[in-house]
Image 1 (tube, one colour):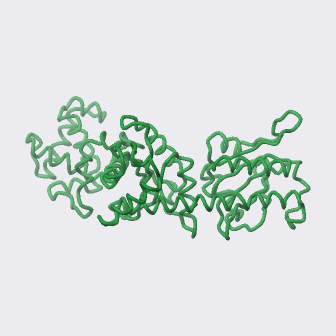
Image 2 (tube, one colour; image 1 turned 90 degrees about the vertical axis):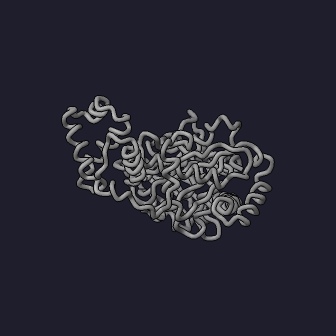
Image 3 (cartoon, rainbow, N blue to C red; image 1 turned 120 degrees about the vertical axis):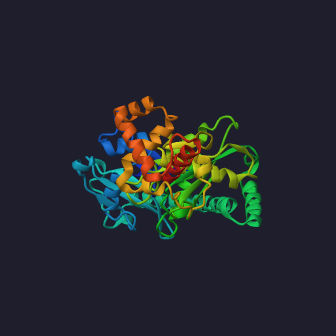
Length: 405
């Protein structure tokens, strides 16, 4: 199906005599074509288009800049002027790719001398533009069909992960039938947190399909209220070549983390991903999802584990992530968790991470041993715990790790 998109883009490039690119609604590159001139090179290549082709997607800043021109609502071609300050040295003509009133992507053309005389006011008066728009409509129909198929798989995956026992069994059976023989092979589940759901009607199915195609996953879905704070997460089912080779799942996680929906609406939000233990078949999907989600949360809690963490490598977080959402901090440790004692809490955690070795701890924190001893005495005063006692150390260590989640 992806080959069809390349053919359509080549048709538009040929019809208008200008290089064209096709991106989905999230500005992920699907296909691109170059118009061959005398030297078979494009006369104008600006940094934005170069990055889009090389990295297979545009940045969030570029996306926001183009969307400010109303491309998500456009019913007809738009001409967008150049802006060197934004890295757009050559203007663009945007052909919105729509189907039944929903935008599914964009065809971009460099608005150089080849298209200077193209009249966008009456788009279908020019036979070249009319042909290009007809091809864009065919692309929209194909993206919509692909999106509906992807959305159906996503609904089955969501039910298999979070539904009631009877519903999970039925969903697994339907998902297995839809995926064919590969469903009985090795797979891994990836969780990306937090994940911002699509906003407009029709966005979810189109975006899910595009992400699945671009990231090499068999099915994906958004799971609402997946995190303790109520934030949603993305679940992705990835086919593996072997149980011992989770590399495709890690690659998919890396790509999904680059989505503009990873991390939520705040530019400062940091998204992380987790991988569950690879399994054969779909019987243990719910367990794999629990592991993947725990690993993603651990990667967010401990920077050294992320941005992509595997269940097998998150240590104590395998236990701590199973705590109920409303589990309160231990009463003895709670005073240490106050914002005014952040430095003391970090000192205690590093001390316990270093197995109670003062020399290692002081070196890790960059402080003198006497300073370390003073801080540890303050920790004992605040908590009432004895750091010479193993059980008190264990309680403090686990409580500090749990607070990170």
